[in-house]
Length: 450
Image 1 (tube, rainbow, N blue to C red):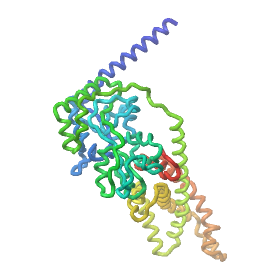
Image 2: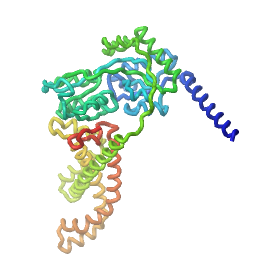
Image 3: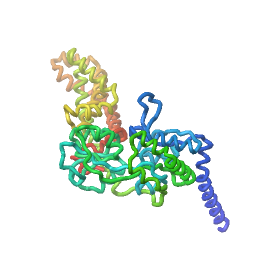
Image 4: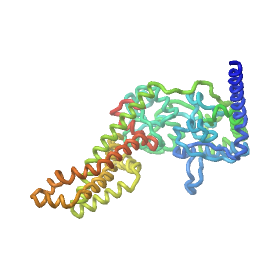
């Protein structure tokens, strides 16, 4: 028994020492590798991190320049790692990169998971509304109405504290302002950096109020204490010698709020990690329900539409066959996300669909093209002699199709239809990674969506 206890004590000591050595050697590992890998999302656009208009292989932005300045002071080469913004912290925790430098707002929930350097930018949360709504001066004036924002942002946390509004989440910075212009939203709450460049440049929109404030900082893993100290020191040196101010000035970001950041030091983690809550389980079940509803409605439209398309292509006139063939090739040959984007945003001045209707109709039209080919294959699998025999017995073409051809064609096409339905459910479940979340597609139907 004593021997076993000694073994456990030795193992615990080894683990403790190895974790401390790993933390101490994090900076040395970067120097041995020669690169400083920092994570971000180019979808955030200008002025954070985005592709150079003249060279798509080059990244530009004020955070690109900050990363270069820090890496230079550490004797390293900066290396950008593309990652979805909403999963940056999870990717940092699993070791996909060394730090996060992409407009990451310092919040209590994030402090519980990562260690932050001193802030490098101070911002405010700006509520943007339409100019034809002169009476809106605060969130309180938008009681019961839709307000758009980005998921996993400080603005989203502020909106959650205002239960009088309905929240719609986006993952792009232009889409919420487009919806606001078209009347699908009553307001948009986002950082002033985003509002100034994507919202207030539109003549139909105006800033209604400043709702809150926050800061951006670089996030690292809590165990990388030595690296945190080095990065924080490099950031402090950039502020002291004026390089940080020069970068922010070059990108038209310097203002009086940035001066007050000089004495703010790094913030470390000191709380328990977040856990799955009952409310999150309910949100997951709600999202699963919307996935099933949208998939079922879209597939019903696709099955009926695909049948009509296949019949028109096989038995219609020359014009009908040409039009149907063009429809099928266009919808099968272009990305479905592009089709949904055109349907929802491109046709908004002519046909203003809500997100739920756009998702169902867009997916239904897309999958109808695929189902049409499945039906056509099923119809061609039925021997021609059966059709000729039915016609020779005096049955009409419609009766022959209904009683002889289509029942057999459906049996052939059914496995493919089932596969398409499964694929459609997977697409609907994951479409939120590319744009507006489908499980929140129609706020009129689901009340206040998360």
